[in-house]
Length: 79
Image (cartoon, rainbow, N blue to C red; front, side, top):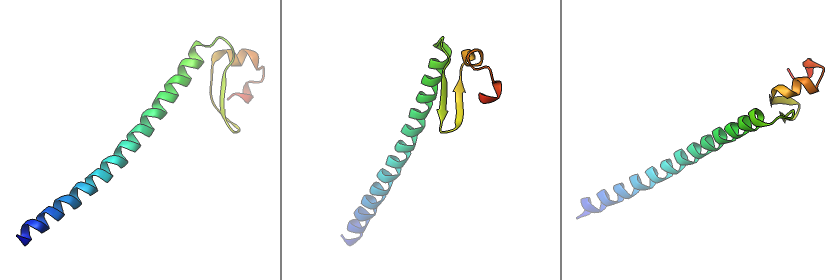
């Protein structure tokens, strides 16, 4: 009887550990999925927009489309 109790407790502990691990893996997966979707969205905006589009993060230029080079004369600003 005591063995069955300890076995049950061991299964409960294993279940709880696996649930925590699955939650962490799922959260990491959702972050990566959202980041991929954001990058795809930004790429589609840049490709489809006819105006000059520049996407920046503070002082760094992350993405820009071909119209930007015709609007900005100084190429060193966008490279």
